[in-house]
Image (tube, rainbow, N blue to C red):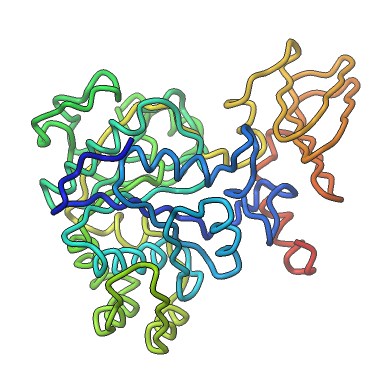
Length: 371
């Protein structure tokens, strides 16, 4: 099902697919990023994201790095693919995509989505509501997920007030009063310690899931006075093609992107802008950022063990483990609370409560040319 946006205001989904997802090593590697992995279904996380986006958007654009472009084309051949001039995190990537979409469409609304998250029912209605708020208010919109637990692994969004007419369910898309569907953002908060996370949930803060919506004019206005102002000025001076399938290369644009420090869109734009709105959503969501996350999102056996990928698991007095493989028969005896991952010729074993430290390991592997 496609979105019902009017031709004058097409909704264009921009899917971010340039990251690696290093905490899911060894399934995720330098040449096989997290979004290419079929962890829970036959299709990859990227394919699932693009399929969801088509329920909301008139067009879907995937922005990625040059080395991933062929893999993106193979997995989602019906999506437009933009190769960012230089990999500099989500801020510059979304700046480039926004400028290109703005040149190719008449008065579009952009829905920015990560390519590697798990999302449940209610996504289409909720994100459509957010694009309506972005169109009606000309604000930068961030989506705040209603927390289901005090979580230390996510950032939080503090609203200036609670929206007065938040739908009871994200399946309710008929919300005529867009002013009631959002609140100004008071502040953004970094990943908290457990006690602070509990206080955030009690205070009515939302998880920051990394979903956004905006009119290009609002984003480009904010970017002009931000850490990505240099690439913004270069794009503004360039003659951008009117179609997304046209290759675009300009030396001054590439130089501007290469010279900027990597920066997320949160730091570059949202945390400093004064016109940010939060639209609450309650669909099931998880960023599956590390191996311990699988215990939250996958079905467990009688012993609490969960599997992902293509794995045959046998256990003896082993429970509450996460086991993932591309194709392997794995047996566990007398162990618990581990993540056991075998992919290609690599094996990783880590306590689930130290799964975030895989990123530290990957830094060492990269330094040794082993990632």
